[in-house]
Amino acid sequence: MTAGSLLSILQRLQCSIGLNPGGNSTSITLNVQKGSYRIYNPSTNAYDMVSMRSYNGCPTGPTISIKPSATLRLTLNNKLKTNDPPDTCPSSPDHSVPHCFNHTNIHTHGLHISPSDPADNVLREVLPGDRWAYTYKIPPTHPSGTFWYHAHLHGSTAIDVASGMAGVLIVRGARQAKRGEVDGEADIDTILHRKLLALPLHEHVMLFQQIEYGCFSDATSTVPLADPATFEWTFPSSSTGEIRGYTSQLAFV
Image (cartoon, rainbow, N blue to C red):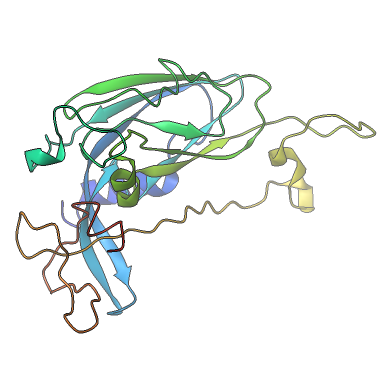
């Protein structure tokens, strides 16, 4: 995909606008795929091209909105290829050891929903080429707020999240504060507003993320290129940054 193509522009627009901004019951799809985009490098005062595991090709997962009483049907479609090299995915893996980086699932933080299938089951495994349909039934009394979703398969969580497989999940409420009510419930959406005509406040969603990408000497190397004197990772021109492994990139060896 070229940076100026129509497909690229539409994809970037979806990444910035998010999914289901109205918050009503809906069905959405998150494609787990490699995404290519640029990240600003303060060391060189330039933008580096990177290739990362992603949701829908976005640098971070697109913001998803939903309302209390609504149902969010989310299909996770794993379009990543089988793991390469194969030794990253042993036949009987230890869940405390990083492995199977292209296997995944989804977990939410803060939602008052079931931890069992087809909802927020962190033990569900979605292999490359497979898909899984999640159903999140949001209770009518669910408080509004800004929550989070991310990849959470034991063994690949750090690699996937460090690549950008995490996003904001907003529950939008409409409960008004009642005058004189001491223990009543109201949603932040109705409390915070501008004085003029009580219009909603402007929103700016922020998701802080650290991407530990590096460049490599060849297709099989897992050790990022680095300056021999300063040990700072280097980024030769025409290179593409990646996250290939845990020990040399995420364990700060």
